[in-house]
Length: 111
Length: 110
Image 1: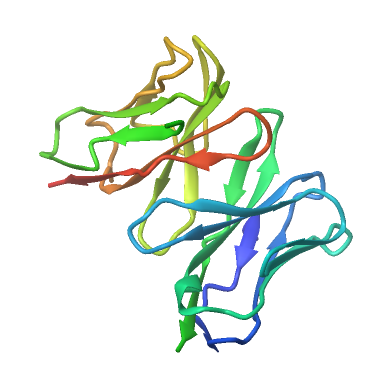
Image 2: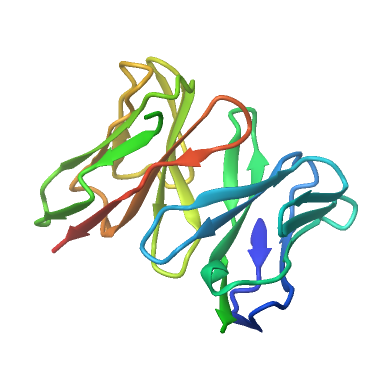
């Protein structure tokens, strides 16, 4: 079992719809969870971090964390073509704040 | 401007040659990390350093070496012992929990 799993996609949604991205992790001791956006050929950009159970909202983005079920999700409301990218889920491990990444979900928002 | 810089952006080398990738940050971050990314895959940790003059192996350290002589700098050497060095190399840094990435170096070895 991979430590951090994401559906690879591709996921396509129409412009204005809600995009839902999911991630599960295996280490119950993980405390910090992150979503990165990566445009093709570019480096990852941190868009959300979440540390406690529940929802965290930032503009059109909402991160949801359920530690009991070991999943993290990212909702993108009012999706725009500019949201088309690969979204990477990352989970912390170890005392040196190392991150384990999922393989990413490719999202395409259709105009 | 504060940030993380990596150079060069693209690097081409012949098999059997060592190559050093540069990573510099002026964010006063204490911890720095090197990852590699292969097409269609997530990031895998190569080496990390929490303080100057100290660093630890990550998940795929074989064929790589690093140094941390200054807080701002964390260069990565890809040696000839690395079997599949062609990849996108990413440097990151943090002072808390959130890691921020440099623009990356795309290395091609033929």
